[in-house]
Length: 637
Image: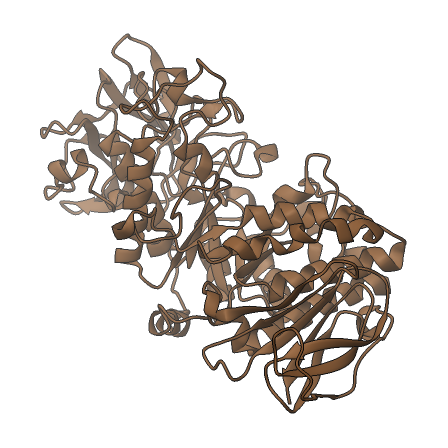
């Protein structure tokens, strides 16, 4: 006897708080909306719920009914929420489906489920009923994360595009699966000494060249690399290896693909009808309506979902500047001023504050990071003092100034020393992360190595110096995959990194230098304590423009144990160079990018002994050999 698959009028959530939803304060909508397998009166099936407030009707179609768009209508909830719901008997895990929405104007729309936990592999666009069955093994990590919440800890990030980090070239050039990444990527990141990995968007998206930033499935890891439980397995593997996982999160825009959020019930439900507020000219995509309470609930619920269901340790929020300014990337007449006549997007500002407040209330041991490229006040300051409430902010000024500086021939750098020191003027106005991200190795910019001047030796010496300066600079660090070994070509999302380069000493030794930097950084409290405070930094000398040398101290909570950092931005060796130091005694060289192990020239120092010869405002001084194009670090012996 064939089982029937009928829609049973059923409200799974009699406790659904409609006022919480309508006021934009319901932050776990994923527990209510979407598809959920369950039993009703002893009958197994799936409950469906979708928000489509202006629709004339909503029905289900899928493999279970031969994609009949009329046989399984959903019912509108009685509470005026605009939610349609129903229970379908005898279908469950793995069932493929879509919503057929009849708009008020009669137009028929086939929509994926905004809350779907799994989707078909693109270019297919249907949603899949899915209950990821996974037993987590990362309790030790989560307990440690909770215990150390609020404490200053090392934070060095490896940014990865999962589809192109490494591929199976002997198997059709396919990307690694989540499970294969757990075997290879986790071990690599652990060996390199990074404390965190940041994944470019893993949420489902239809278009590969968007790199994941044009999302249609906000609650589903992409099926490109495996099912959701295998992505959990990958996150779990990172945690068991002692590595935090950050996700790129994109609340700034969504694509206009008709199976997604665009015109979901026949109206501009998630965005604005007026293109001056609802259309993004840069990405040709839709901009969320941050003033609509139900949309705020959708977005904040999505952020909480990844922290809750996937144990994610933090969210890097993409394109925050595009959210803050109504005139972002627009000409006069292409934007609408706010109620005060200004260009600030007051609704987006309010949303970002509430997002951060909610995340830190629900998961105080996680972190939010803003990619924000302007001088907006207080991006990483608490909301109660007028800030946006992020934990960290990308230091785009440092990135831009440093890459411009390093492009210059060293013979001209003496005229541009202010470029390399300017970041310290504002370094403590925010909790800054120094990013060398994917954005710096695409769109004709070339690789980082390709921008370094000079012959091969000098290019690699410059690259090691850039990396060393980043790790010694106050703040946290982020490095895009491939940069750590001097990728020669521009990043191509269709191909794996040029791993074959590691057979050459310059590349392998650059990788070893980054590994050494990570391990030294994690072992040295002077580098991660006071990372966002002026108490952690002191200039010794930034005025030697003629030689392009700068000298500074980094300090942790124990101010009696500083480290001394010397940077030489030219290929000239300086013998008997005098530097003032704060402590008498001996200073030991502990880090040197010119070490022969890293393909340097081997100019180094034995133990330095201080003299009571005041210099640079210090009572003591030392004399040392300054290596060419180098970063050198000294500790009191």
